[in-house]
View 1 (cartoon, rainbow, N blue to C red):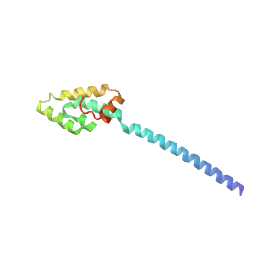
View 2 (cartoon, rainbow, N blue to C red):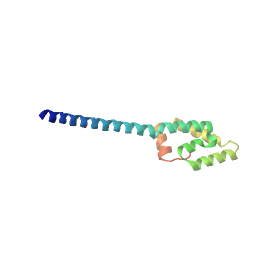
View 3 (tube, rainbow, N blue to C red):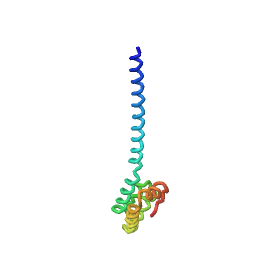
View 4 (cartoon, rainbow, N blue to C red):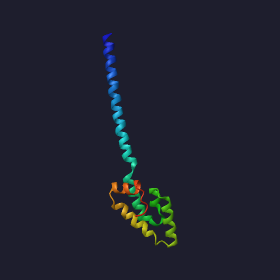
Length: 115
């Protein structure tokens, strides 16, 4: 009988240890997923490259969620026969030269639409 009780206690202890390890692993995974999917750097690089390559189309604005500004830039580029696309080029360079934190705070949190 005491062997059964000791075995039962051992199983309970192992189950508690396993549960704690599972919680810790889930917490680590959650933090890793938050880092991965917050995508500060990914949006910065993507928006910067798109701004440099396709600045006149305003695609970099759409990537950052600035739909109105993207449409304005697209129309301005059409009306000026592409001259306004230099704005996208300049913005792309600015995006890529900012630090990840500065870019995130300025364009994703602060929602600064131009330059």
